[in-house]
Image (cartoon, rainbow, N blue to C red; front, top):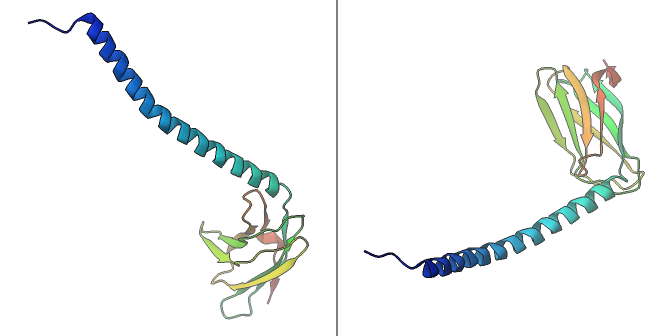
Length: 147
């Protein structure tokens, strides 16, 4: 039995390599464009969010309500609109309560929140926004207790 000639084997190997390269080059071009677009969008968001600031204040826990209410004020302290504002209440047993305010605050604008919680064993309260680096957090020692 005879095998294929070395010249034919070389031609087939080169043809196979070029075919695989052609397939991957199309995918690689598409992948590179998509990745570049995502990086550009994320960079734009990060730069824009660097002009954001939020503050939580006037925190109160009212223990006279049937199961307790936590209230406070949220203020946009910088120059861009902030959306998707949430208040998170962290408890000492490592659980958390999320209050979705579904609100956008313009620069300098304030909003209040008031929510009922079942226990006074909260550890900290955080406000977060659509900008991952724009948030504020206070521990329970900053919460006034009303009885």
